[in-house]
Amino acid sequence: MKTFALIAIGVVGGILGGMGLGGGTLLIPLMTLFAGVPQKTAAAINLIGFVPMAAIALISHAKNGLLQKDRITEFAIPAAAVCAVFSLIAIGSDDRMLSRGFGIFLAVLGAAMMIFDALAMLKDKLRLAVLAIIRRDLPYSMPQK
Amino acid sequence: MQVVAKYRRSVKVFSVLAGIAVGIVGGLFGGGGGMIAVPALTLSRVEPKKAHATAVAVILPLTLISGAIYFAKGAAPIQVALPSCAGIIAGGVLGALLLKKINSTLLTHIFYVLMIAAGLKLAL
Image (cartoon, rainbow over all chains, first blue to last red; front, side, top):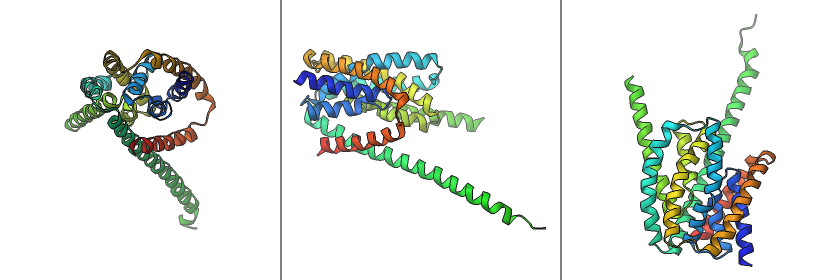
């Protein structure tokens, strides 16, 4: 029973990941909330399970020339060093506490992204509205003969 | 020229700081690093498509490092890892195929709502 639940949760997370939405962000809570998997185990599975997909995606992105190479080193070297240290810290920490921390992270990030998206959309709409007004007014504001 | 040099330096500092943030989240929670890497790259003037691709290049080495650490410390028992990883791989193929057929704006918004709901459930 639990095996089937795990497969199903994996499929859901995989679909989201394959669509580029960040599969792990929902895979981890699905595993901890619905399959009773401890946070660290869910984290480990998220890390390992997405490696093949990420590798395939990376090869195709590289072929399509989509990688900004100068940015990768600046970004990845500090990230990798810090990541190793914090992985070790996580291994020694309490599952419940980590899970709570991840929950806060998810909620804050989700809300922030939603607000950013809404603002961007509003900006676009506003720009279009202003353009429409300018275009409509143009003939009237022009000097009449 | 000085302005350009200054700009380059500030982009570098920003990248390093963002990299540290990605490392902390990725290491501590085993996921969610990409959710920071993509907007951080976009903010430092990488176009969205390239930002997604470059984020994968940044995240992949991290997942290998922290995945190895978590695995070595016994955090991934095989009876849990095997079915869920099989599911992830199958789902990944499906997701890539579905991508072309689905309204992604709507999906993104549903995704945000789910993120917030799951986050609150875990935090409270």
